[in-house]
Image (tube, rainbow, N blue to C red):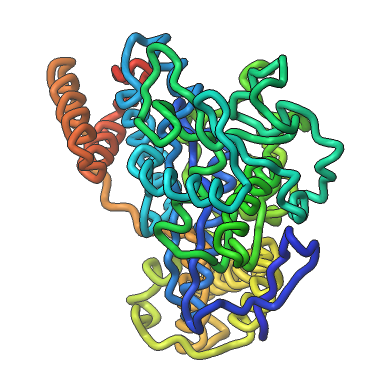
Length: 481
């Protein structure tokens, strides 16, 4: 079977052929760290996590890079509002990102470069663009001349002649007199320093990078001139990814990415998710309400990654019921293993379920099709469980059941869906308010030292004792029991 991927650049599915046999270089745009991650982020990073896991299951070595944008107007606005610094805000929400995304069983990337750690590579790329005639300086700013790149618009399908000033997204275009920009659609590569803002010295004066140049520089620095896959949300096709192509390809003379993949957006009850509409849900809010992280993963994977995903109470309730079915199947071997003589770690024999799962996933990572195979296995194991309960025997041999259970556990793991038997419950001892505060302080100390595993352990321990933590934007933590 051949793995095919829908390529946004060509608007069609194409057979996947990596640059180097057996290896995949993959870059996905990360978060701007000024707030907690929301369901849209969960959709993206669970999706790319599954893509990565599937490549690894297929035998590829995957180098996966995901950046943090840690200098941006939104971060500075948050810092000014709180009376803190850009660094404090960025670090707080980077820590929060890891807390939230790891609860969703998303694997860590191979690297998490930060913009502020890559200023020199950004300078180098801008200078090369200047030498080739694609960038020009203007009173402390540096702009990219889109009219000089004849292929501009090839990813998004937009015509540069129709583009207006301000279309370049989160870069400043405050030039109403037109004295700086040569063309309305030109976008900033470097922004001159403003009073009171963090800035770095550069050949064009003190300032900071524009948004789009960041990813071009980090991709090149960590992964090389051309990568296999570049991923991101559908809202990044234009201007962000279009501008990345323009910046990178005129310097290297090579494609920035062989395959461009984009996930659909998340809506809430059919409306765009936004704070102004009051329908904005963060990952931690949802999980702290008691929704199982595996339910969130399952909800997201029930829709194809390229399609819009509508978040409703009914959809989550449906995913909860579906997870119960899968969880029963995943725990079957632990429940009946001794009785049937099942073993863990036995060699998995190729079978029609694996072929069907791979056939779906090879078709542009069709997770709904892959899940259908998992449910078929889980329901068969449920039938065997019912036979054991009511008749004391199964109508399949232990060897056949062993293979079905192992197949389910293995394929579910490819999608990051995992279940383990619950430890025997012991009545929790009640903590005093003082003991709770001590544990919260220990957790904050662990997070500051980037010991995220210890922070998660303390949070989980308190949760088991009936104490729920609620992290606040100012860095403090509230709790209730």
